[in-house]
Amino acid sequence: MTVYTHGHHESVLRSHRWRTLENSAAYLLPHLSPDFHVLDVGCGSGTITADLASRVTHVTAAEHTSAALDLARAQMAGRTNVSYVVTDAHALDLPDDSFDVVHAHQVLQHVHDPVQALREMRRVCKPGGLVAVRDSDYLGFTWFPQTPAFDEWMRLYQEAALANGGEPQAGRRLLSWARAAGFTDITPSSSTWCFANPQDRQYWGGMWTDRILQSALTTQLLDSGMATSPELQAISEAFRSWISDEDGWFSILHGEILAKA
Image: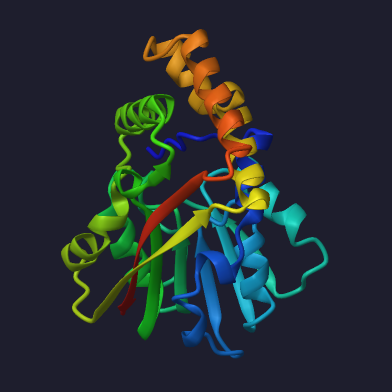
């Protein structure tokens, strides 16, 4: 069972729709070819999927529920080289050796068994093809100024994600998970998102100002007793204040792997 800690509130989708192939999968770009068939596992709102579709012959967009997949359908309305499948990352309902590239962005941190998910990605990838995975590493996040409310935000997210069976430090584990899944030819790397200019602070801080108060994470924290409404309001206000701080900096670390099938 996969539990998506963030849910699909508008504030979460705002984050998803910001993502592009260039800002979220640059490590994969040099390895794409126009004749490729690509599987995008956990495609989310479909912005990366759409970028992939503009560069390759065909993309299959996969999500674990029809409702989640409908978000991608809306993003890619009118595209003729995209197909859609509802399937579980642990047991992909797709044939062996079908894709030149199997891509997953911010997926393995949420699945119950990331090694099994990688085995499945390897199974549906053509021999010699690539499995490309990128996941954030929450304890690798850095920010300035040092803000106690952000420390509390991090503590609460860690607690919620772990309670859901996820792994918020997925980025640093990708290499070990890929090796456990049977891959032997693996290129590991890392990259960051950085939010430090006024426009980026408005995007990141504004998104979390809303998200900590209105998303599935909010519901989980309140219903479980992990946090109170005033505590979440204080975190929201801290993000709002951070937006206008000219010294404000937020850097998000991601691990990446290119694993040859």
